[in-house]
Amino acid sequence: IQADGTDGNCVTFVLHDEDHTLGNSLRYMVMKNPDVEFCGYCITHPSESKINFRIQTRGAIPAVEPFRKGLNDLMGVCQHVLNTFERSMKEYRAQR
Image (cartoon, rainbow, N blue to C red; front, side):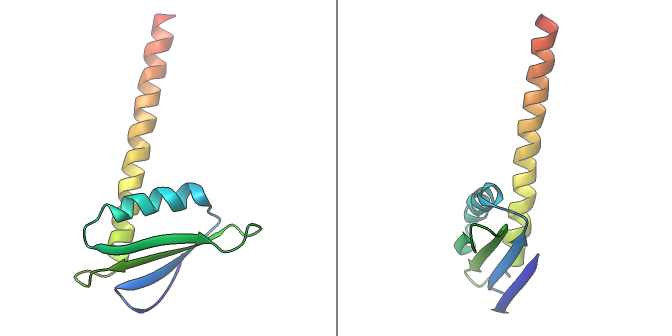
């Protein structure tokens, strides 16, 4: 990850080897934070697997904090989905 920005409240993070799967999910998680004024991403080019992910906060906190929180929250959601799937598969196999 590279970060570019003149101040800490508005930063563009460059995520390598990623696509819309992470970009849109992470954008959704970051935008749930009330301190975030703007969050968006773009794919630089269809042949490149790179995302420019921009966050602008309202000024109270640096942009890296909602970025980290969004990643952690997204990991928690993914872990919940995985646990639910594995539990359901275990119940299904027990019924057969």
